[in-house]
Picture (spheres, helix red, strand yellow):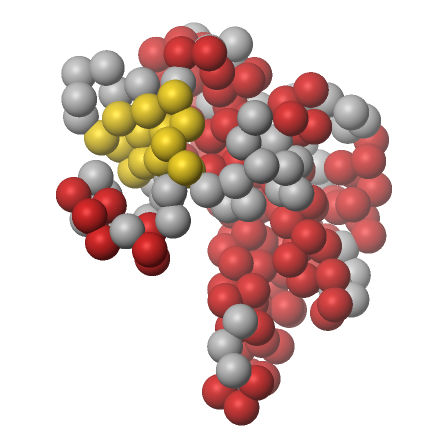
Length: 197
């Protein structure tokens, strides 16, 4: 299998953590990809986004949730996303909340990369509010097991200060929960400041 990836991407990181947690990272070749610099990448993913996973049969999956779900169904027997309907719903609910924090942080990061005179204070404010509110909601009901919800919440907790530290956003509750996870191998190996090994 091949994972088209960029090391700092929080969406890629979710998949890389899942690979480690499922014990299959050695079955996947990381293909370092910068979609904006590679127009041919649209032949892999027509949306031009990462991550994308080429499966053994040559077919390609995109979107981190779809990729992790397939990996977990194929190799994890529901370890990351439970198969029971109620538990699956709860896991996906936590994932959606944490992923929303990541989406808002990603959008704010993109906005801050624009020339200063073209930036939108309105959208930076909206995304900042979403990050703080989402982080508080996650901290109020943190994941109790290390599944997809916890993976995504940990990625969010690390990504916000990594990319948006200068904004001083209060995600202290989520950061404290993240700290409680300690030095988990999958989180350490995929930290956003690390390049691919």
